[in-house]
Length: 131
Image (tube, rainbow, N blue to C red; front, side, top):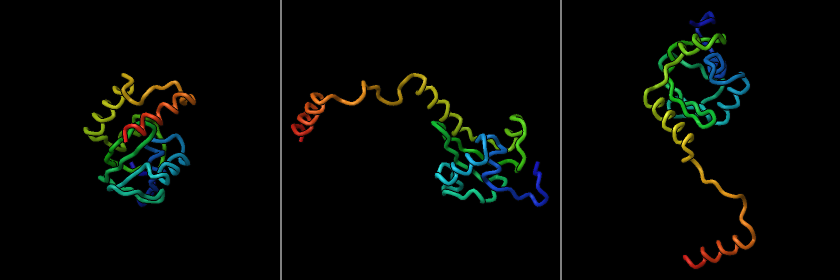
């Protein structure tokens, strides 16, 4: 499925072609921000991915672990893009569980905002009494 003559493609271009990011610039920013790991280490946008390598990609709340199945530098339709990689079963289960927890509202604590001056003083008294 490689579109280049020698089969080499940049990682940011592959992530864009595999439809993980809407633009190549977003893919590059994610890589530089440490949201994409290859073999447990951060990588550079110019890295050349190889078939069989495992990538960990964080985007929003989701973290995906995918194995590269094919290389492509051309962005095509979603069905073709999904043939470029295979998500691991553990990754799918983890994402589904996290989505269910988010839907149930188990993630995060709801507050009314910043504490008032009276509430802040009460918190400070509570913390100093606990020590």
